[in-house]
Image 1 (tube, helix red, strand yellow):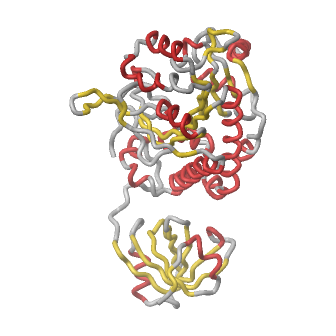
Image 2 (cartoon, rainbow, N blue to C red):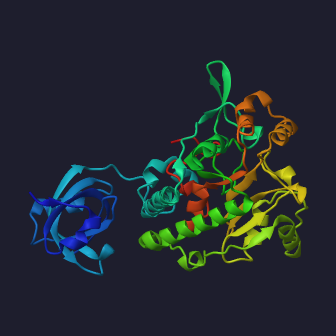
Image 3 (cartoon, rainbow, N blue to C red):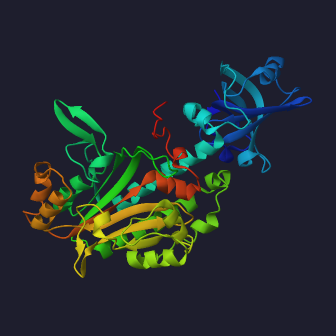
Length: 431
């Protein structure tokens, strides 16, 4: 029985006879030779068969086999730098498992609507495979960074009784006769946990019912959120900075082939080094006015404002101390100017916008209670959250980072719809 391998493992088996399972990604012919490109999830392999070297039925099958048919190939491994991945297989056998119907996604250009309708098949393209591999590596980098930094993973609930980021973007559902909502963030549940464990994080799906069609928004996305006891705004900024540098470095180190497939200019990512520029909101507004923006002081940044601002820098920038009126109810006011919040948004370069949002949290019970009332939120739903400020309260802070925006930035993608296997967008729930 031949040694069964994956494409990724072949380079260490030069001259050996092996077999591989996979799908027909492409094929071509030239006289008495046939070429078949096999994909198996780990890579792509060129298989070559000469008419004199294989049984007639194998040669005939190579002519008849359709794209995306599932097969097992057998042959001898040859190192050849001209071939994809630097390895080629001299084919001696081909077993058909299933002859695929005519594949609907071909070499011709397809519209976005068609590709999204066939997302379950579009995932097989080399570009989408590269994106999903980078996404997987980013997720692992997220987890490894916080595990190695002494954080404890906390699994926050998906169903919640209250809003975290405002009541206008909630997905509501029935919970045995009570109103419940899909989680906008795990932060509120992390704050009690950091009082128990010191440094914690959660990582999971979050939901925002925003009627937005921009290239940066999804209805369902994944977010990582750390929370740290005894941490102020400066600590939050330092943590997010170190974390981002670590993640970018890991992707550059471990995903070079994927970056080539995506034609990503990695020289721009190589500039993501500490320190990041720290710009106070008021100074950012002044800078935007000088660059021609009509943004008014007190307004939150729009996508165009973020793009204009970040074009002036070669790495992420940290905009801090926004007006409290445009930020969430739980953010600690700046003691030097209570109209400002001790918060920070990290804006990625190249027009990718906000990827990190964080703050120091209000730790005073009475102040938090007044903010809850000012925002028109039901006090009874937040009694447990107020309890944190009754029993050993300390200053604390954290941030959230959206996985899909991070993937879009690192892969150089124009739209977040390609960053997640099955995107949930406005009016898009299929497949």
